[in-house]
Length: 290
Image (tube, rainbow, N blue to C red):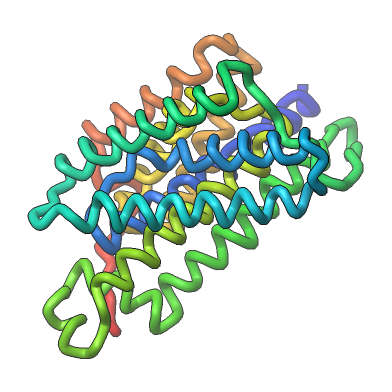
């Protein structure tokens, strides 16, 4: 019984790490432009499918991963320059409509290029280990490690570095940011580049286990959205904690009740949070000083 619980916990933490990376990308953009990026999940699928295609063509795994990350980051920047930056009065509702259109376009492009079949990136190097009867797959180490290194690095960048604080200041105090020489254009481009980068990483580390599918970004992105809501769309740390909890709850529901209810748990949590505690897990509002 305890072994089963620990096994589900490991699976939930690894899956929750992917949700956390997507939530970090969502918050990275929202704190700078107040844009809710519905296409965040498509960044993950695009990286996974692209990398799987390159490795199937004979390209070494890590070179394919590097190309996929750079490509998706560039796609995010192009999205910001060609669509988001063109709208003068951008509200969260308008941003949802715009990014939903981008999401649909990316899905159609992936379907056209790679077809309807799910594809997976080859497993990353490493060996599975067995601790006290609990099996931990090497790819789960990569998923959790990606959150620690990439997600943690972005959190520290936004919270501790002068540039990170400057990015957030552009959204909260745009006039003051311009006065002290912070370019809102640069800040917006950098925020979308971060979202594309972290979305690509999430898709690549999860693809060997959960596969990549042209339509899979919608559900994956919504899980990241739930985690971002738990963070109040302002707190990276609360969103990461919420994402890990979400992953574990999903694993427990699938393991102890029914796997078919797994996705329903995420949206039940979303409804409860929006009704009972719309600020999520955030205990107090955050302020930014440049």
